[in-house]
Length: 467
Image (cartoon, rainbow, N blue to C red; front, side):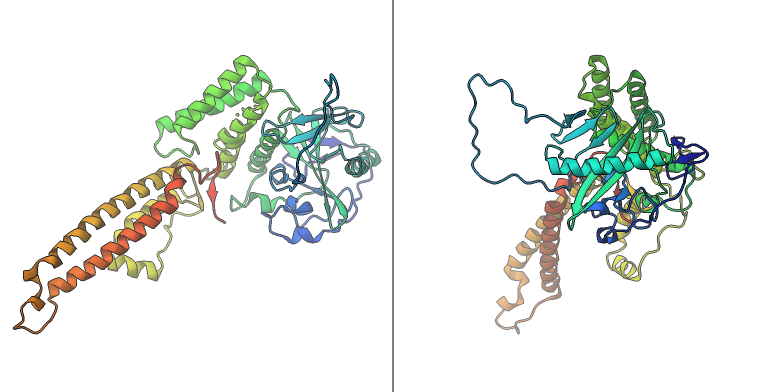
């Protein structure tokens, strides 16, 4: 028999002899798992609150994008640094790592460790002997579990272990990643519903495979030095970028989540890496497939980042599925436009239907609660330009009203024979001054608030989503 990766769609398996014992033990879910899926605290990083079977009661399934690298708090003592060099010192090693382990450093600076013989990756700080002891205990539990069921680990599968301590209890998140299937899998059933909330409706196994491929490229982005990119991977990334560039060039309603300029830079980076065979390029490939597979998601040490993005894009747009999204303004859930609230209807009438213009633009931009970064940025550039024009127009109108009120003949109070009153023209001018000043103030606040959104508000390759 075979044990699949938590779902029948995965071709990656652990092979088990016919007589293997398939029993599981219950998992005691820690309190942190009751947090929302977006919170990354200890074992809660898995985002899973419903699994009831597992390797042990302290080991839980983990998604690659839930590895808490950027949430982990590691502090260095805030004190004056001191160090004395020995005479002729040429060795700057921290010491000897446990047998078989190697330390790698991500291009961003994050250290991690790899045990090539057992194909285990971890960010656990194994220079600390106590942390290594805890990690080694979890490794033994995996080996005992696999041995007791006569499983054989695929030759190309790596195991990621995320060790964390919460309330003096040791926990370990894990996943397996396979290069041959470009997917991730687990040794137990895993409800991934909370992880695929960006799509709605029924999902097919082929659709979920896209999501698991996105997670594969995300893993490569996190740990680029473990595997070497092949010419096949470089070609895959290059073709992905080429497809995206063609789609953008030939269609005004393309679902590609990158501008032509971004894709051109990605293509140049991948081509340069392929010709020079940079070892650091693994991360960039990951970044590119992570970004282009948010069209097809990540660039392979740098190229897989292109495919990572491209795959995520395919997942979001139901690529290859019934009812696939073919243009950015197409809703795959309904043809009915959203209904306006009574408040908006009343305000729109008072403002002579002016808000309807922006509402139409937003409805085309924000479809099925997602939008494209390039079009979102373009929208904010346009809005900032309009707000700037409002400031100019309001200031001109303000000056005109002040000049009008300064004309002596327009003020009846200058005529001592008449009772001091205000004419309708004066009252209208005063109201115009107030509204002009309010318009200038509001436009200045909006420009100040959103000026930076032209570039910095959205991460590379990321969708803006609201669920």
